[in-house]
Figure 1 (cartoon, rainbow, N blue to C red):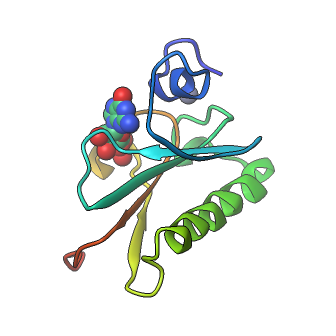
Figure 2 (cartoon, rainbow, N blue to C red):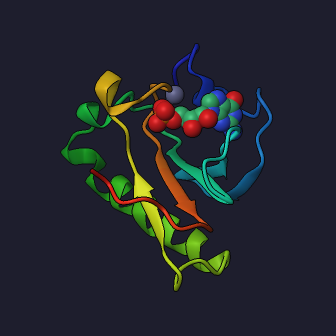
Length: 114
Ligand code: 5GP
Ligand code: ZN
C-alpha cells in the first residue's frame, strides 16, 4: 500500500468506486471517465507503480489480472464481440495514475492502433 496513491485508497475503500469484481488479489471497478460502454480497470491489491516496477515475483499476479479481465468480459457478454486490454506506462504511454492497472474496453468498435 502507498499512502498517497488514489487506487490504494480505492482498495482501502477510503474513496468510493463502482466495483465489479474483488478477491484477495485484485479489484476491478468502472473507470470514472469511460472511453467505451464498458470500461473497467483491473488493479492488483499490491501497489506496483508502473509495469516497469513489476518483478519476476509478480508474474502470476499479472497473469491473474489478464484472466480476471477475460472473466469480466465473459460476465458482461462482450467476449464474443471482442474487447481491448491496455496497460499504459509512464508519460508517453499516457499513464496518469501510478498504480499498475489494466484497462478493459468494450461495447463499441475500437479504432485500430496506429
Ligand atoms: P491511465 O491514464 O493511468 O492509464 O488510467 C487512469 C484511469 O483512471 C483513467 O482512465 C481515469 O479516467 C481513471 N480514474 C482516475 N481517477 C479515478 C477515480 O477516482 N475513480 C475511477 N473509478 N477512475 C479514475
Ligand atoms: Zn497504489
